[in-house]
Image 1 (tube, one colour):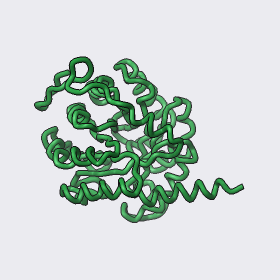
Image 2: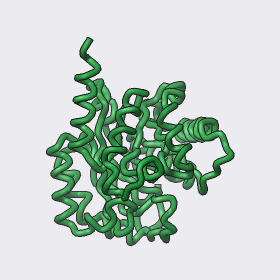
Image 3: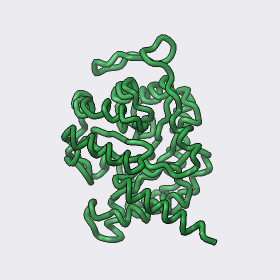
Length: 290
């Protein structure tokens, strides 16, 4: 497979690197909620933009999340916040932000997910040893993304997204239709079903009320019989319930994530790894008391 941006690599027979083991299968076999720690290498992410731009700060944060118990580190270098009005990041800039951090985090030994909408970036990251692709447009923005994932044989997180929020729509029906289309695209590309994770995209193309509805009714998406991921960490809907800035929303994040786990979430994507792990452990202990 040849792609633009100065990257010329391919997967499969005769490739530079063959099919990768499905780390998701191994992790999910532990039968507990998995914790995905967020590492944003961006100056403009809504919550922690600019905190981890420096290489050493980013690496230290990754180490801290791993030490706290993160099962996966999700690394992104382009802000995907839906209401920020940010400009798209070029392929060259995204790769430049990643090049000094991603390889070292991969070497730390914890599975790494590459959070990108560019198949060229996904291809590059997988070549370095990333284990998962996190696509916030659910394989629907660039057809090359499904091809990259299929040929690498890695898990992909398919997130629901919309270009704008519309209060008048039935968000649950919209998410269901989006997932069905993404799954169809995945199957046509040759992505194995056990490699697909569904993410309802809390805060993306949704009103705050719709985001809360997606969490409260998460069980409805179990009809796809695929692992569900929820990332409600510090999201704007929390502010509408309890006015707060992003860094003040840990309590709301934990409340949303605990409900998500109860409603079937297999993976929680969070900025606050130790707090989330502690909350889930205590919630499990309390619910185990008869």
